[in-house]
Length: 323
Image (cartoon, rainbow, N blue to C red):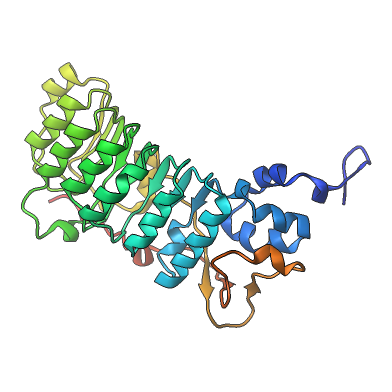
C-alpha cells in the first residue's frame, strides 16, 4: 500500500497481473527474477506470467553460464511467455534440441539473436520453416553455418528486413571466399533494409549481386571485408540513399562503437550469474512455493550478484586494425 501525492492510498499489489507485467518490463532481467517475486504474492504471480517475457534478452549472462544452466533458463522463460515472446537474444546456444524448442514456441517471435550458437546448415534447413515471422536475425559468429543456412532463413522468413552476420577474422581464416553467402542473401532476402557482414571474406562481385537484388537496402556494414572495392561514382549514381560502412577500419573496432554504427545495437549488462553452490545468494523462493513450480524445475539454481560489468576480455571482442 502506497500513498499518492493527493493523500489517497494506492494498492499497487491489487493491480491486475497484465498491468503489473507491463510495468515490470521496464526493469532489468535481474530485478524481475530476484527482487519483484519477493515483494508480495501478487507481484510474484505477475512475473510468472507471459507479460514480463515478451522480450527475453539474456545474451550477456549466457556468455558466462554453464550450458545446462542456459537450457534451464531458456526453458523457464520461454514457458512463462506462453508463446508471446517477440524478441529472444541469447549467446552460445549449444544444442539443436534447444533451437527446435525455441522454434516450437516462435509463433509471435519477430527478433531472433543467436550469436556464437552451435547451429548447423542441416538443422537450420529443418527449423527455419517454423520461424516464418522473423523480421530481424542475428547469426554472428556462428561458425557452423554457411550459404545453405542463410538461404533457408531467407526462403522461409519472408518478412526478414534485417540480417546481422558478423565474424571474427580468426573464425574465417580457413576459408577462401564467402561469396556464396552473398549470393544466398541476394537470391532469398530481397526485402532487406539493414545488412551487416563484418569480416566476411567477400569480393566486390558478391556485394554487387546483393545491391542488384536487395533494392530496399538502406544500411550495409562491410567493415573488414577488405577485398570489396565499391566505386564512388557508381554508388552515388545508383545507390545514393544507401549508407555503407567500411570496408576499411581505421582503429581497433571495439564493442562500445556498435551503438554509433548500428540501429539495432541493444544490449544491457547483467553482472549476475547462476551458481550451484555459494553463500549470500538470493534463492528463487517465495511465500507461495507453487508460484515457482515451472515444468522444467529450478532445483539447485541460485542467483549471485557481482559488482562490475563485462570487459572485452570476457566478451571476446578484440578487433584487429585494417591492414
